[in-house]
Length: 207
Length: 207
DNA sequence: TGTACATCAGTGAACGCGCGTTCACTGATGTAC
DNA sequence: TGTACATCAGTGAACGCGCGTTCACTGATGTAC
Image 1 (cartoon, chains in turn blue, purple, yellow, cyan):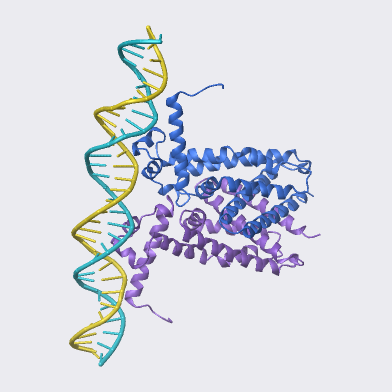
Image 2 (spheres, rainbow over the protein chains, first blue to last red):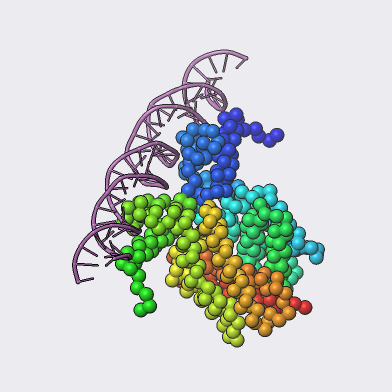
């Protein structure tokens, strides 16, 4: 073990995480701009004033949630678009998205909701992370032999198209979470067709 | 003049519209789930209780705003995807979107924000209207000779892709509204490239 | 046209409630020696 | 290891404030005759 936190710091982090978790839960049924500090502390079981030991405001907490929701997503995004020989590439990508939504529904909902939400610093944080995703996707696409001869601008355009498409698909899976398996299959089919059409466009882009 | 409203009804509609307008203004900086009834009536200059003569709740007002924001958009959507011989088809479509955002920024912001927002009836109303848009776009696409031989499912898939792409483009124009003309041009360029790639995919979809 | 009554959009007072923020505090944990 | 002091995460009371909703009301507009 490289470094054990002091008892005080460990406890502080635990409370902080409890606040984040509680907020994420409460945000399933409302937007960040209506989330109350007292709601969050009540859900955790601490005094309202304890909130200020961790965050300046609920907007500040929202920015932390963006890091939590998107920070850990970079490896998956890369994997989704990494060039592979498999004919099942698109099917696999859609499965990855579906799996992520099933295992982190609240995070996905939060990002979809607050991307255009009423809290500016949170919108900005999401915008930055998505721009990073697009850059990473672009880097992966550039490795693909299919991208030979592509101008930088066109690669970035395609990367944004993929990132947006992933978000759209994720939010459709989210809506289908409480629906039937057939409905989820319909979403998967739609997503696959759309990705295939984009792939066809990509293949015939030049010349 | 076919039918003049009574004085009482005319005044009532005027107040109702003032409430809708005031709410739309207030929603530029927050989400519907945090919009207060008193905020709205204060902005209009009527008593809080007057609100109940027009809407059961702010959620109810939100649903009315969806109708206002999207109800009148059907002709434009059709026009955007209508088949034409012009080589400028895509450029023209992007211009139409940019123009709509410039003339109705608050409506566009409202839809982008509340599509995944915290108020279920409003999300549902937006979902329904967008599904109608997709059906209309599909009908336009079906008229195009290029769509010969396309399965129904594929046409609807492409229609959804176009509708989502329009919304993404609209929200990018919205963010660029307060930025420089160069930034807006960059958004237009990106949107055109993406629509072109989708068009290429469409052209080579079958066979 | 005039009158008597009905309707109903908007009023204003009142209510109980939860909000965000301040402040001085407590007591467990951390640190210096 | 033991002691004396510093730090600081979490407490609890208190504040002023705006909220949504109720209720009985007013007075202009509408309607029946």
